[in-house]
Image 1 (cartoon, rainbow over the protein chains, first blue to last red):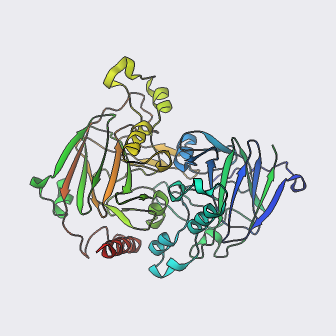
Image 2: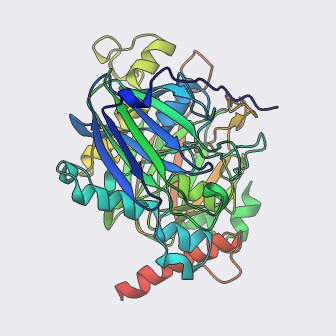
Image 3: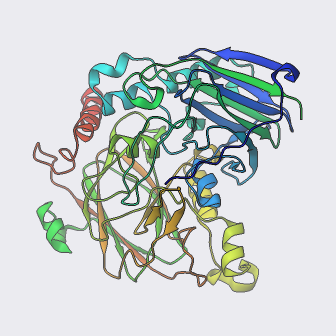
Length: 218
Length: 250
């Protein structure tokens, strides 16, 4: 049986300094000050929130999925996971998690990967990589980032088990309505989220839904 | 070992270029499409960390998640292809002796190398000092006009990492032996960077000392019967994306 480690947060929504909804198919790029806590809420369940972190003072230093999992010697992210940049610097740390497991191997969908995974005719469908690039084009500090900085991301609330035989599968069902994850920023970090619009696989239960983002001061 | 290579139509007399990379060594270079890159481990338990970029557009590179999820795998072997972030087949694994290569473990750093094998300084050890993957790749990225932001997941050829149902990563020792090879076919013009440094999860505390032979050979044209093209329907579509790219180049 697979273990899921669920840790609730003491923080109250009323005390948050920021509280917004990100509809499915939209993005969000936002700075976190050192010590601030970001909560992402899976409002309706089984929604993938594709997320990247950067050292906002050194935008070339992106979140490194591989550095993070290789250091903790576990491929799943949950409470206690230290999310590391390519340099080894801790960007944020997961401080609460009522889902219990998050993926960082599955990456984000793109028009191009949709043509490979499903059919050339799926290339027109909205996707996370486009959302990431649109957010970079809009944010005041977005010009400091580009496609080269779109490293493999975290898929909060998504379940991508690796089998002992070395297989990779996309599976349903580890998150539910109201599940959330919280990260505390260890530096001035930049957060880039795409609320995944994918309709071709079960990562969103074939029904992309909104997520809520809240921020507390440390 | 040679049987698979012969199937791929290799003439052993036709090696275009060959070089042996010392333990701790590094290399980068452009290899045009339609060639074979054969890596041969000269001792047991080799590990070679490798990054791939499209030589004509360095913003396009090997994408670990797209490669793995399209082929429903967390390890690489014959039949698998390396896909770019633009959904193109960059390279195919046309021959493979060990049967498992690791895309998850990453590269060593100065800190992890000093911590595991003892602090190592050029000042004291001259060219026998212990190099790290991060430093080796940083030098080759910079040499090619790239930098920090271009670090991305490597393929660790010859190494095996197994994940248990709880997600714990375990390095499987003894995955490769002396003389074993893996052969890639370039499907695009590639900039290849490599570091012949230990796997970060290898528990051995003596710095592995495995020379690596690199060879580039000509390849036959890819035909409709090709094993890698037909390995999965996703692979065919990625090849079609590559062929479209070159058709538009004229």
